[in-house]
Length: 213
Image (spheres, rainbow, N blue to C red):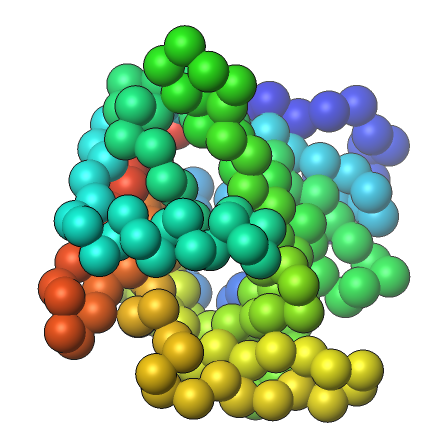
């Protein structure tokens, strides 16, 4: 992990937002490095950059279609299997004005420009956290933990019109999205994205291995 230059106080304060989402007991049971990654308070506008590579990437036919259609609203899903074995970079930037964090994920593609995925996590909504992916579309998330890390599960999808959030009907939902952060020890962690449909099974699965500095 590499951190950009910012005032020293940004590395000393503790961010309790993720701890409050999962509860003190579940948080205390997490590996220390996971607590540090999700509990490290950044100054407004400060960023942390994680570098690694994609170690697994697969899509079925329905998943390819969903990923291509998602490009119409900003391309929030990986859509090119040639990213396998290519470099991956995740940048997390504190957004105090939006009460959340900007996440930028960059995945290399063989012989092509990398795919860049933008999203914004905001600590609001009925579950305490939502992810905005573009074109006014967002996902209300549920957060869970186990002995190795943290998982974010889609609760429902919505579109924001002015100040109203309209829940998308079931036939417009692409599937259940799960994003997992699993600590592997030796300063390594796995970032996994899975999109699963009750009708078509596993649509998309991407795993990227990252290293702390």
